[in-house]
Length: 508
Image 1 (cartoon, helix red, strand yellow):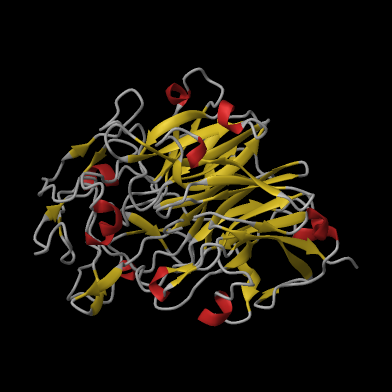
Image 2 (image 1 turned 60 degrees about the horizontal axis):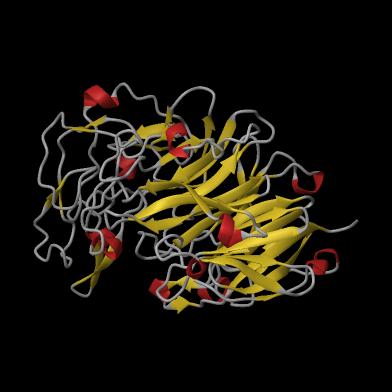
């Protein structure tokens, strides 16, 4: 997911789950399923959680004047906001609220807080749904979330250990003009490595003029603040940890970590599980394979913006053809590496390829050269890069997902929400994604819920499905969170267009 946002509400009863046999007019559901709106009027919802017959939805609360919120959908036509940022002390519960997960009596949320450094840091908090304000407790904070991507999803293993994903601050490890949306507010923020890394000595000139560098002359090194100046080959960048934080930050970007949520000091139990992701937005344990953690990853872009009335690449280290991925982390086999920022994956085979492969060169060499290695060869050659289980579509923003365990939804198959391509800023020149796809156990992907045509008027029909961002199975039913109408580059922003859909197999 590239960006998040807002808040309001109007709902349909849960009783409709068992009654309606319809599908919204702008989509097709493959395989003979019904699809009904369970909730409408949501403000850019990001996730759904449930316990027995109770359902909660998180709203992002990212735009000015809004607050992140967790809303409960009730059976009697009523709804209620059980917790929002304005119910807590200032700076404690800030957007974007990217996830809500229920586990053993607690609702866990991933969000941001204001740190003493002045940065907006990622945080994981929990509260009891019947007493949210009094029980609200932050378990982890000071996660590196002031940049492009945030602290994303949280899930639990069978022993109750919590796992969460953390996105990167930048597209490919170099802060530049494409980060202007947050860089003017947090000019010293940058990517933090998950382990101590050794740099190759490559440095990057600003890709295009912007307010912090009107002449586009500043030099920035990977994993350094903007305008850092050049660094030499062999420069070591230390990883932040709870014992040795960097500017208050305790973890690295592009990662999956775990911790004990019931420990007296959860930060002391923080453990790196995997790194080398760009934006691992969705994570979920595979119910059919113990110790296998599935991770969806948004691939790198070649970012564009209007400069002197022309659309041009502004990314300092652009990358083409880095498709979205589905990875498997084997959590019992030690820390695993998935490539970013020096390796990506073959769109056909899922095998790792070096960033210097011509496949990843942007087809505008006069503007930007092909990617060069960030890591020194002495360090890079010791890394073992894991393959992708499945390669998803380029620019599709493959986000949260779930694994079916019921016969009605092909047991073992993985259903992934693709939130969409955000053209033209991400380099995409067409509308890609905006659907739910199904991945089988061989890694083969096919459409499950897809629009009747990939056109603007169909995809952004405010009464239909727009931008699915989360999929969760609730017994024999599939819940699909729809972010709503949001494509700023197309001047499409509708704060009350988010929905929660329910999908059921048709009775035979």
